[in-house]
Length: 138
Image (tube, rainbow, N blue to C red; front, top):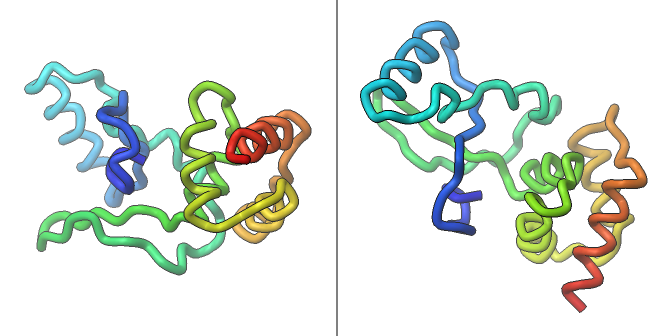
C-alpha cells in the first residue's frame, strides 16, 4: 500500500515473492545487517497469502536489468486485505481499495474475493469488518 498508493508514510516490512529465493534472501539479510533493519524487512512469508490465480494486471514499480519490481493489481490487493480484514491494520486500506474499485456492498467484495481466492471464502469476522468499512464511507 505504501509503494502502490503512498497510503501512509511508512511500513514495517515489504511482503514479496522473489525468485530465486535463496540468493535473494541472503542479500536481504545482508542489507538488513548493513542498514540496521529487521531481518524480516523484505518478507516472503506472505507468499502463502498471495492469490493462487494469475495476476492479470501487475503494475511495474521499478524495472532494471537486474531487478524488476511489480505490484499486485487493486483487485488482488483488496482480496488479500479482505481475507485478512484486521480491523485496526486493514480498515483504511480496505476503504481505499473498495473506493478505487467502485464496490458498494459486502457482496461485491465477496464476489471479487471468490474470483481471486476461489478456495478461501470470506468469514463472518471479515464480513463484519468490510461492512463497517462500507458504513463509514456513507
